[in-house]
Image 1 (cartoon, rainbow over the protein chains, first blue to last red):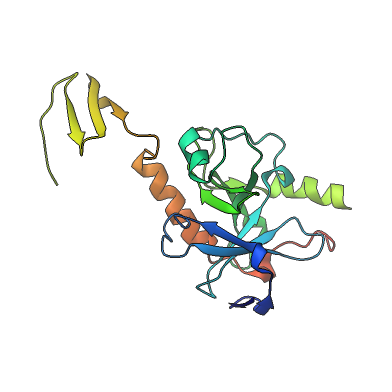
Image 2: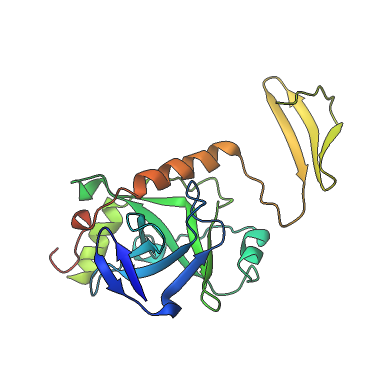
Length: 151
Length: 72
């Protein structure tokens, strides 16, 4: 399928790359169909690109790439909503915010990760129950670690 | 907005499956219990709004600002 995007032009993706977020991202309930696009070869970052709105894309990253011990508590009903039990394997991503022109200002949202059931590719942005995780966690330190590992 | 006055241990029903109970009132803080079906996620409004506004910020992120591990 051809996907029109503002950031990347037209890209060709397989139907099985589709990810359905039944309730959309919080604040974006009208957009439910997405694809995950690798940012660059070898990059830990992915883009969660809307299939319906070319300009809508979220930069996401697996939390293990930037944090050693991210262990959100996920309510049973949140997991049940995408067809998995509380202990089933899940793909987890956190949403990244980079202020324009300022990569060092990068933050990740640990309070609202996206969980995806790899079996049916249904996903959901959830609100974690841990109050220790905020929406603007600075990743400068984690990023440097990542660079050292990559170097 | 519907406004109701309730005492401690009294509750209100929302539809026939969601119950909101006033558990304790202490000064300015009110403890509230919510009994709802598992299919109804219940969250504090402020965290919900924080994530919404963070999503709006995140959606402005541009590819040229993403650090490239290979060039680092």
